[in-house]
Image 1: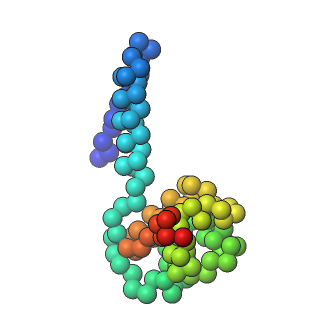
Image 2 (image 1 turned 180 degrees about the vertical axis):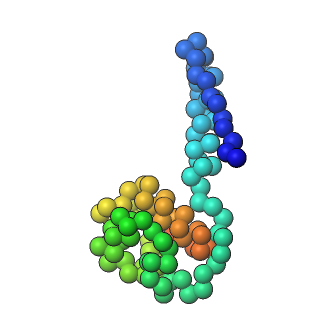
Length: 113
């Protein structure tokens, strides 16, 4: 069963209360969208086709249009570099990160480029 958090913002709240509320909501959002811990490690995943990741068609198509053929091609990229690929945006990069995490894989850190 899903846990619900009900949050009420009143017009008479002080600025400090509103800031605290925003920090709380931002933290909830960050927790929600962090990639899950790896479920399984896929052997030789880098050499395998992007089909291994089970990506949505639009995401798979954008990657193949940009000449990414294997998982290894994607693993060489950082999140920042993928944001420059036509057809990719923050949500699709997040989906890609989650698909990689399911196989115990991750994109390069932005500072590694």
